[in-house]
Length: 345
View 1 (tube, one colour):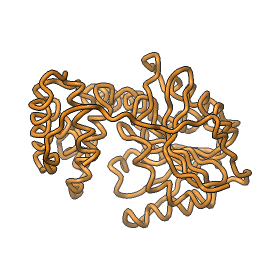
View 2: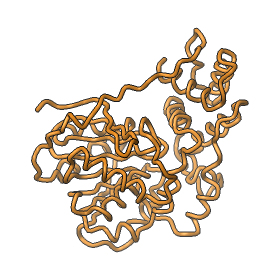
View 3: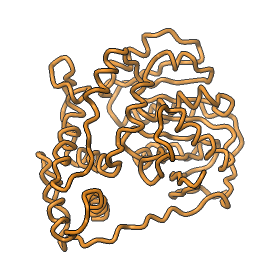
């Protein structure tokens, strides 16, 4: 069987689940942070594809995946849908890597379908006490519904600018300062695009993950589990809070020192070392369709979109240019155009 490397989707109950798949071997499902997409995990996935067949999933409601039919009230709503989708694909046993929101989905999936999961790898998985969790939920998720004056763009840029300076970003006192260099401008811009693409429901899975971020759920796992811990995560303090709890021997912390490249390599090595002795997965191509995104039709300015600026005003400038060229479009549509303009230039 030849290695696969492309975007695909399947439909479950008339809802599209989009994912990237690459490599061959035992299956590793990868679940992303919010409000990102499976695409963000491809650099790591490519390093694992020599030993695994990797599925980088767009969580329902993010990336190119349809939102769930009913507004979810818990992570079980997501894992139930994923269970049906994995069944359609013929996935019977696999490992799961999850980061942040993806880590909480991995924990919940392991609790509900332990017979399917050979190993769980938790990255950016933490423990929050009830008081801090309630405080985060009250302040961390402002309304980012698109508005024609583009005011929400300023709010989005404020969030991404503070994400790596404070945790939680909304508490800008020394107690929550991360005291680390700011991320490069292009990274902040890409994260802003994730928020814009996710739209007004960017916080749906995000909030539920925060509510689930408790040591007690990890303690209940009966699946072999690795908890990655590395120094420069924005939530290292809360990863440590998780690791300070008592776990059975099948749940182990994995401490990583070094820079980002070393961190990635050590994660890759560990995940490969834990590779389950499972047979290579034969994918049923009849159950897959090409994911052909229909680009929105709109009049974009003849120039390239404005280059990213430290103050984030490039987003407002691009927004105003698109409104001039598409005066009849509503705010949600202009936002779709904005994401497309930057994505394709």
